[in-house]
Amino acid sequence: MPNHKLDVSEILANLPLFRQLGRDDIALLVQGSREIRPQKGEFIFQKGDPSHGFYAVVHGQIKLAFPSLQGAEKVVAILGPGQSFGEAVMFMEKPYPVFAQALADSLLLHISKQALFAAIEHDNSFARKMLAGLSIRLHGLIHDVEAYSLRSGAQRLVGYLLQNENGKDGALKFELPASKQVIASRLNLTPETFSRILHQLAEAGLIQVDGRSITIPDVEALRQYEP
Amino acid sequence: MPNHKLDVSEILANLPLFRQLGRDDIALLVQGSREIRPQKGEFIFQKGDPSHGFYAVVHGQIKLAFPSLQGAEKVVAILGPGQSFGEAVMFMEKPYPVFAQALADSLLLHISKQALFAAIEHDNSFARKMLAGLSIRLHGLIHDVEAYSLRSGAQRLVGYLLQNENGKDGALKFELPASKQVIASRLNLTPETFSRILHQLAEAGLIQVDGRSITIPDVEALRQYEP
DNA sequence: CACTATTCTTGACCCGCATCAAGGAGGGTT
DNA sequence: AACCCTCCTTGATGCGGGTCAAGAATAGTG
Image (cartoon, rainbow over the protein chains, first blue to last red):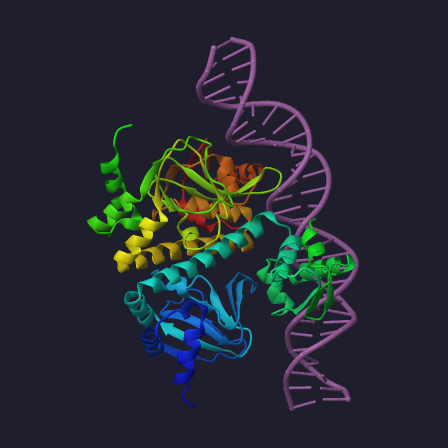
């Protein structure tokens, strides 16, 4: 119920995608944006829904996935604060190829297609920024395709654990950002296989697992791993 | 050895990506373009090379793939006349995540990054066109990820055969656009498995195979197929 | 705190597809 | 025609990881 307009402007200005935009452009976007507060488990949109804009995560956590037949699903992405989704679909006539669901109570901003197109029209360096953003996403998908096609489950998991490693050399400790089932699906594994691989890595002394907390005593050693 | 300038302008203007561009924008692009005539088997660029522009296929056939360890490779895309590649990499600082190789003697145009950026600067509706282009590509990759994760080999192959079907209902006959090994890799299958699945489908009366020629007597029946 | 619901683990089993290993079948070339 | 080369097919075998089923651990909830 409180007025959040002030927040919105600041939040938008700090999104990676919008960081270099001028005040007036931000103002345009604020006009076209609205808040969405999905509860845990709530769907933001379903596969097949039409797109009217895109979303930015302010806080909480969202997953993108496609449904498979018997209730199973394949997670494509797990998104946190500062990340956005749904941009690509905006530029086509097609409906969403995935669905979006909140993994926790969240706060999203929805920015309307019109507002964004106006911003692009107004600031042509912004178009380049958007192109770069989409390109990075495309690059990520290429990486996924590569991983799915020619890496084993264990290799994908190791790759995933290692991407939290930001250039550090020695030990590393962090929390998994979501439930193990969700991460398993993200890596195209069943929860069972995921669990077994974690166990193997732990037995090999490459990691320690305590609930969602992962400790990597020797990053380099884990990087060498490859059966 | 003849001067092809006239051709280039016409060719560029007829690429899907550039179709709505004005004469002066096309002229800009022509300035920044050069011809490349790779022979069959020749590499256009390697995985890890830096990008200085992007490529359009005038005639011939190009495959994009990533190398795997023991000489095997995974084909990501098979491109023919009118299609382009390498756009996304241009907008990032990263090197090519895949390599490109000619499947036949080909003619490509290479359009420099500068020329394209100038065109974007000059015509801001063109930026939207590029965004749409990248979005479609992204959509295609999402589709691939979906197929790899939750479809069987046979389902992927059926899906592939059916995408040559342009809304027709009855029978359909066409040629595979590349060697069976290349298509197998595109579908994330070994040539052996590919061959076996074709055989199964033929035995089930759903298709007829004669070399690279495929006949689908009943498109609808094949679409129903799903083990 | 008991009580239920998830989430996670572990074991037994199985199946799709890769791998390894020989052949066919064209298709140029000389 | 005989040769070779690449592409494709066919069979035998094995492994990665999925599936099914049952507990264990953890987290919510009244």
